Amino acid sequence: MSSPNPSLRSFNTLGLDIAADAIVLADTSEAILHAWQTSQQTQKPFLLLGEGSNVLFLENFAGTVVINRIKGVEISEQHESWHLHVGAGENWHQLVKTTLQKGLPGLENLALIPGLVGSAPIQNIGAYGVELKDVCEYVDVLHLNDGRTERLHRDDCQFSYRDSIFKHQYQHGYAIVALGLKLSKQWQPVLTYGELARLNPATVTAHEIFDTVCQMRQSKLPDPRLTGNVGSFFKNPLVSTEKADGLLLHWPAIPRYPQHSGEVKLAAGWLIDQCQLKGHRIGGAAVHRQQALVLINEDNATPQDIVALAHYVRQCVGEKFGVWLEPEVRFIGAQGERNAVEVIS
Ligand code: FAD
Ligand code: EPU
Image 1: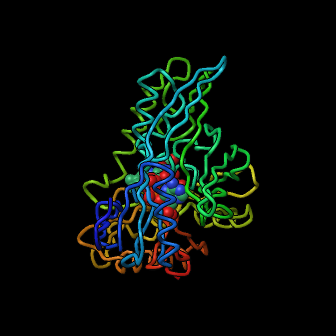
Image 2 (image 1 turned 135 degrees about the vertical axis):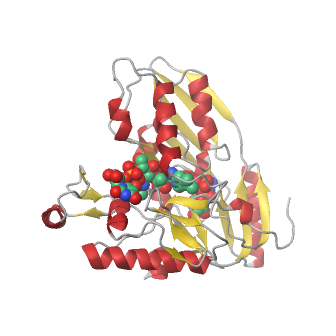
């Protein structure tokens, strides 16, 4: 299905009114391949999209946007675990709810994350102490050049904080078409983060964790259906222990999260907040008042407003703390992805 010069407004959660040459809804691998081959023949740009909850369109897209609609959830049982094979076009939060309704815990900490199942491995989605890598068994990837489907097992995916092979070696010319998840029957609640730590590990249920996560998220993150946003605009920065120790001397309250790698993760939202930027507005774009790491489309923002605000936020934090934030969001220009740091520097 396609139409001429359609708007992507309802296909990006920032709600920017951007046009594409064509939008194709693809419910099979063959449909994705066909759209890719047509783009190659006409030498036009090609972009795969899920729900557009992690993209910033900088301008009209000069090619075809393919929206993943590959559906299907298959569940099988083994002695110690449940195994799910899920089409990339399923909605992530709906999958979390479905598994809980069927009595399969394990995804509850990842409730309410917008987007599709097929996008989840790309930045290794994470929240409240759990990352996709903790439950991922494999990712099925379609090679667009030859139509071959390859299964990458979890250890092949190079998962790390907001990163994976799908942002590097497997970024161009590949489409994720399915995800395999493994949920252990020996369920262990993960109660390390925020208000989850108040729950009793001996009695807590996955449903209680789900409800608590939803409440925490709804109290600080804007609902994209009401206020355009892309969640955390920047990644939390990873710095050396020496750098973190230096910052601690000046700012004793600075949140620090030591990593296995030896680096220390800082809270970008705290750094932005310390610059007194909550509510700061440029054009129609603003820093969210409940969570400074979220930039919002407050009033008919243009891509240029969002870029100008992201630049300003990055400058303020960089000059105050010597820490230079990098966007988590993917920046898309007319011809395809652009380097986000370069765009806002
Ligand atoms: P899109 O934005 O559509 O696409 C993202 C990128 O993946 C694009 O570059 C696109 O080209 C590419 N892509 C999409 N589909 C495919 C495919 N099938 N094959 C290959 N490439 C593809 N993220 C977290 O990790 N944790 C959170 O807690 C979290 N909270 C959020 C809260 C809000 C309110 C919002 C708006 C976003 C939040 N996010 C969070 C970010 C976002 O939800 C995730 O990054 C999500 O996985 C993006 O899914 P999507 O389908 O919208 O991807
Ligand atoms: N903080 C402030 N002021 C703010 C925002 C945060 O002081 O305006 C402080 C908080 O008080 C807390 C710390 O910063 O001490 C961390 O804040 P929060 O718990 O809200 O989490 P975050 O680091 O801002 C990350 C993820 C979220 C994820 C939550 C929960 C990144 C970039 N963001 O946010 O993911 O949902 O933790 O695990 O890692 C996303 O990626 O889009 C996203 C929303």
